[in-house]
Amino acid sequence: MIGEPIIELRGITKTFGQGAAAFQALKGVDLTIERGDFVAVMGPSGSGKSTTMNILGCLDTPTTGVFRFLGTEVQSLTRDQRSLLRRKYLGFVFQGFNLLARTSAVENVELPLIYRGQSKEARREAALKSLDRVGLVPWADHTPAELSGGQQQRVAIARALVTDPEVLLADEPTGNLDSERSLEIMQFLVELNRTGITILMVTHEAEMAEFAKTIIHFKDGLVERIERGHRSGERLEPAGAH
Amino acid sequence: MFGTTLMLAFREITRHILRSFLTTLGIIIGVAAVITMVTLGKGVTADIEEQISSLGSNVFFVFPIATDRGQFRPFDERDVEAVREQIAGVNFVAGQVERNVIAFHNGQDWRSKVEGVENEFLDARGIELEEGRRFTPAEESAGANVCIIGPTVRDEIFPPSQSPIGERMRLDNVACQVIGVFATRGSVGGGGDDDNAIFMPLNNVQRRFMGNDNIGYMVVAYDSAYSSEVMTLALIDLMRERRVLLEGQANDFDIVDTAQINETVAATVGTMTGVVALIAAISLIVGGVGIMNIMLVSVTERTREIGIRLAIGALAREVQLQFLTEAVVLCCFGGLIGILLALGISVALTSAIDLPFLFDPFINVLSFVISAVIGIVFGYFPARRASKLDPIEALRHE
Image 1 (cartoon, rainbow over the protein chains, first blue to last red):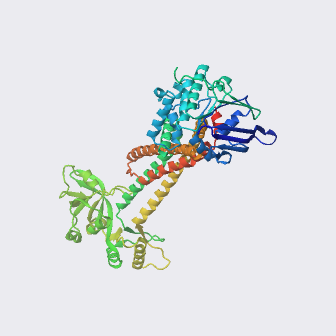
Image 2 (image 1 turned 30 degrees about the vertical axis):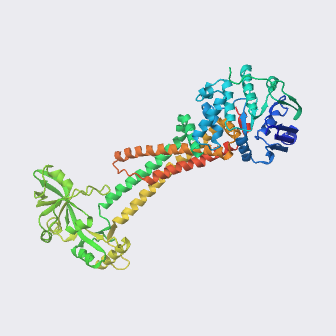
Image 3 (image 1 turned 90 degrees about the vertical axis):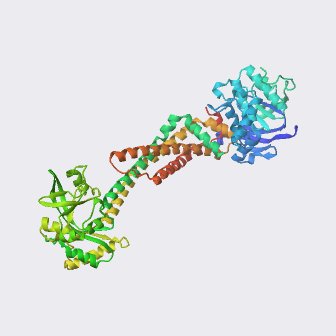
């Protein structure tokens, strides 16, 4: 159901270290993200945007506050329970692609399915389908070292999509790419968002953030302001057209 | 899920084939050493047992020995009779005398020994005939000039193409006719060649070679339903009575029990094998430490991979299982190679030093299981470390 809140943060704080060395990265963040949104999180380094993304990705827990994801209060879950949440509902795309080296593209894409206990055949079929979405079926048997940066990131996206996640978290997805490849990836994410998937993206490039529907600016551990992306309504060419 | 984990482990191991091999070298050497030692030990035991069983099983040898004061009283035929009549459980009892002789036949001569025996001696010692026949009762009582020769004597003084049966030969200056050849009984523990002997009726040897009625030693074969201890006590009682030994006087005879020798030797060899195998097993532990070391390196190297797996939803125990499986598979490979190596070494060594090769399935299976256990024990800590990694930190790892 588009429009219903999928993520709610209430009074989230996060403190690293203890005593005199303690550093408060988040100082009380309130945020609601609706299903189907495409959110870009921006801010200078140290503003708390990465910490927020780690919490939203269920990789980290807040020190205080309530994080509700699909109605579940994540802050009180165990490590393994959060793993299961990630496995079921989240897809990750990282700045450094983070593909397994010396492992073929299709096997990289299969990886999340291994932890879902799917059979070899079912995994292969789903992985090829996912690779098809990013237009890389012909490269299925190539290892990351044999792929360009843009292709690697598309494999990473295919890996994130193979489980049909509710939310796609992208941490600087275009950070290691040139501007042409970056645009390609952004176009793909926009297309993806149109199919209904909620996307949360951290970026420091304003140009990329403009593709999002919502842009959240962080500063000093707090949400500074929220605005609309200027190019979010633009019609874009389908991904992979180049 | 487990099949996939296993497959991943195989792939990771084959990816660094040389490193995997070097890592498991300790296990390989340990397993090979343990199995080889145990296999050789079994071969030695079997070899000794075979030699001892050539003396006959459930057999006593009873010798007269000198007293403290140097008196030596030999046995005679009446002692043999007494054992036969008065001790329950005796199957066969026979006296024996022997002397070194030179055997002559057709210009050939050979240094051997003549043993004065009766058919019952062959029964007691379990000696079979390869060809020919035993003594007849008439030959025994008359002390006829007939003989049963050992295979060594046959090979040394008779031409290979010709059967010695019916041939006449001379022992020193006593002529005799060959009526049989006994089957090989090997040699007992380095004490010369037991096949180098010539049996003649006891009477004859006593009369013609020894010039007296003495008996050198008695062979007593007893029913296996009777224990060695009971038989020994009965024999001691009887012989002391017959030799009129007073209380406090030491036995002037000795009883050698083949079953006891067998047990003693088997126990000694068993202990030695165990000690050597245990020393070899130390290298298994060293091998385990090697596995742990490389697994820790592997966890560090693959921190990022672990981070990815955790981020996409792997549970801590799944990551742990993956690394544990890798360590176990690695060790099992080591165990298998070790077993094959041990097989090769054992076969080569046993044939080189002329021992029977006895494959021991138990020690092979045990060694393999121990390899797997070493994988679990020494893989546990690295695997646990992998599973405890923080996904955020792990993903940032360069």
